[in-house]
Length: 290
Ligand SMILES: [Zn+2]
Image (cartoon, rainbow, N blue to C red; front, top):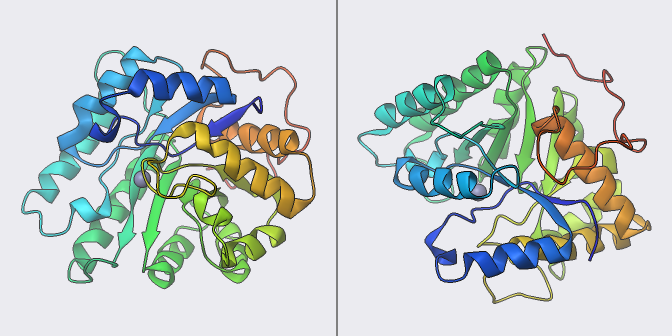
C-alpha cells in the first residue's frame, strides 16, 4: 500500500471489468489509489463512462474526447466530434469533465486517415483551450507529427499529459519546452529491456504522472493478466527504483502533479491537498497560460 497513488489513465468502464468492477475498485483503494482519471473513447462507451463516474463520484473523474482510432474508417467521425463539443459545452447531469481525452494521432494500424485524425486532434486542442481544460494525448507511430503539432501550439496555453510516453529523452526535452505538459508513465517502464527505463532516469519527477491504461499494458510482475488500477503501485515502485527515491515520494509528487493539472480545485473526496506539493512544480513556472 502506497498512499496518494493516482491512476491518470484507466478504462475501467470497459466491458473487461463488468464481471468484477467492484472488486477491482476495492483493490485499487486498498493499494492506496486515491483517484482514477477515465478518458473517453467514442460514443459507443459514453454511457458506461458516465454511469461509472456517477456511481463513483469524486473517485472516478471523466474526460471527454474522440480517440484517433475511432476516426479511422468511421463515416460518422465528424458527428462524433460535434457530440464531444456539445458534451463539453453542456455536460450531462452529475458529470464534470476534468480534461479533453483521449485524443491524438495513431498511425500504427493505418496511416490512411492522417488528415482526418489531424483535423480531429486540432479541433479538440481548440476545445480544450476554449474550456480551459488539459488534454490527454495518445500518440502511436506518430511522434514526429505530434511533436510538430504541439510545437505549433507553443505559447497558446495548451497543457496536459502525453499518455503512454515511451520516447527518448530528447523528445521529452522538446515537448516540455512547448508548454505545461506532463508525461504519463505506465507498465512499459517495468518491462525487461525497456528503453523507457533509461529515459525515466533522465526525467524529472515533477514532470511525471502514473497511469495503467488498464485493461492494457500490464506491468511486471503481472504480465499476461488483465491490467487494473491497483497495479499502478508496480509502476510507482519501478520509478522509485530508477530514481533512487522512496516510492512514497514518487506517489506524492506524481499525485500532486496530477491534481494540479486535472483537479486544481481539489474537489475529489479523499484528496489531501493540505500539504501542498513541495516537490512539485511551483505554480507559475513554465506555465504560459493565457
Ligand atoms: Zn487509453
